[in-house]
Length: 159
Image (cartoon, rainbow, N blue to C red; front, side, top):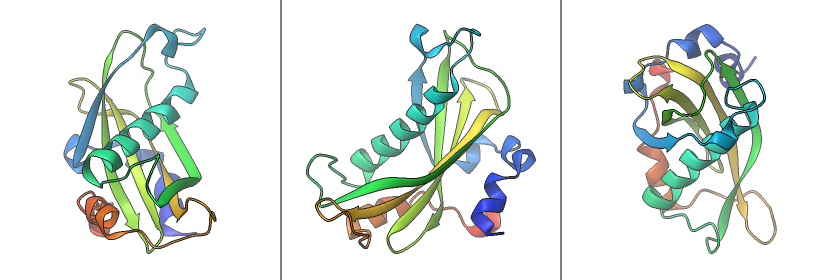
């Protein structure tokens, strides 16, 4: 079993994540439409949150331009573990870190905290493989993007 796979399969370890383990945060104010018929945020919304925090970071801190950059990131795997329900109205804090940085891929971990809560309500993540926009062939991560991602990289001893 790969190290990445074992981390995402360990809900107990994920449940114990603390805010200080995440170097970047983005706030999100839930919307009425985020709730489902059971009056909690629908599972699919979490993947929108993950995409939002990752791409906000890449655009603001790694000089990625989704409409113009030569490289684009494609999601090749994802996961999410849910620990406690969230509902509208709530303000969420989305914590982001990088757990693996390869030559053409990056693995992110995102924790969803309710505002002022020390424990995450959900932890998930995904792996981006960077590819050439036109050919869709895997390509090395550019220096600006890599420098931005390295600021989020956590040492393997802290995973």
